[in-house]
Length: 125
Image (tube, rainbow, N blue to C red; front, side):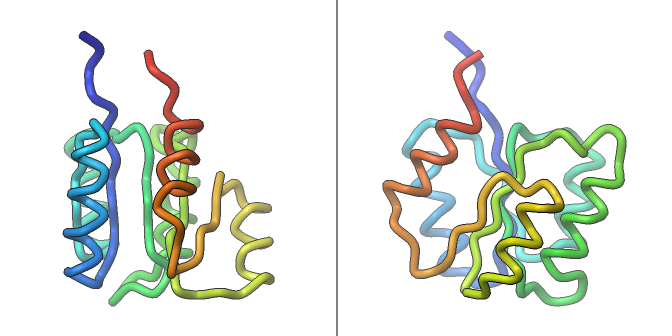
């Protein structure tokens, strides 16, 4: 049986963190859920996830700055990165994609679309 793929999920809204985390676990992923980018940076020291799913508006370090830190790290820069955000701004979306984010999904989001994109970015081993 193949190992479960791991998703690092960063979201400051606890309810959404729990709901999406549960959905991803029920879909068969191992999920590491954290409330902020500082916690996510600590988790990245413990292990490298298969995908990062992050909000943009976070306390402290925002999602864009976190993304830039991940992309600047030689060991982390190839991790597929998906923004899941209420920040519905075309310019921000274009900038995120130009900097290497694989997807920019705005809230409220379609659950099936989110799961389909994650499945595309995390093919079975």
